[in-house]
Length: 397
Image (cartoon, rainbow, N blue to C red; front, side, top):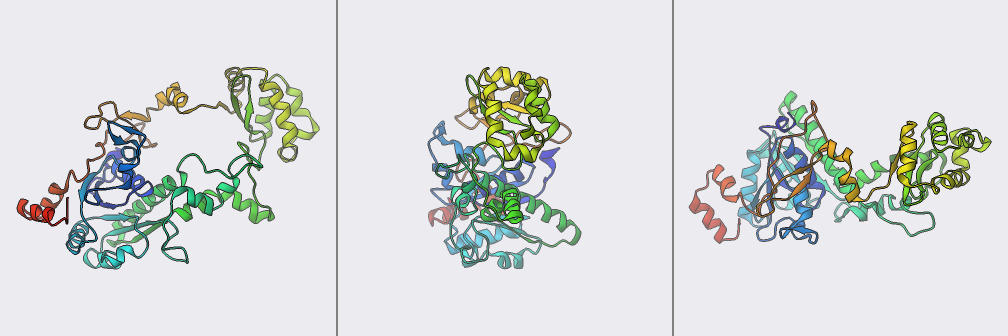
């Protein structure tokens, strides 16, 4: 079902690195035909982000570019720009991650392409947005984590700021862009008109800071680094165990009572300092010491067994190998086989979405650089000889 959601939708993908390719991979998994337009000879930067690699191929590129075909066009060449406009005339969506103004300089800005295809949905992904004093600057995920304040609330109190260990800005921006494109497709059904969709790393970072920003606007106090904890409730953090760590999350009084009972110390819940969430937050350090004095006496597995048995939210702290080996992750079926030529053992993380209990059906593997140039241009009406001449002139590859 999911793989037929966008069946018949043709997307030109001029993005690279992480945010844009994640966006178009989502759309491709949902059934859109995604034509990835890459630079001749080099392609997407992530093709060279190695190590890690598998079978000589970048693991990063492979993780972000399934469900696509690849065509190489030199977009700095006037004839390459003409080719792109021809492709855009037949497309439903174009998505790019060029610096603001760069597409316009090449003759394929929103107004340029709207003139040849009024139904075209035009999605621009940028670092800082299409307007403003920093709009022309490049940006990457950790840079924007620093800019938007995410690093200021990440890590242990007193330590230097650190980035969140996953590319949440990039992946989040890809998700927002995909939602924007799908919303525009729905609206186009009503009026037949294309639209411009904008997404930026900056706005995603500010959006992910919604709760810390709300706190600051409410009381004027800057949010601070709290390690694994959170400012608004307690206990809601990691505690050391005899062999590792256990995460305990008690978001209300009832759950807090369950935590204390499960750990064999129900009297902690009756301590006057811990009778309500505001009191627990105010006495966070004392509460942490009281609970950790118990969790340190037993292995993580025992704490987890007791807490889950009592219905108290908790988790062991897994590394990647432990998470992938867990029976719950296996039951979810989110890691799937997707063999690539020369790499039959290649696996991918599937789209984390099901419909009627099923994920999108098997997608196509990430394409080799320029693997589909001939096919895509032939569909535009170019002969084999025409394409050979363009290759010779360096327009395509």
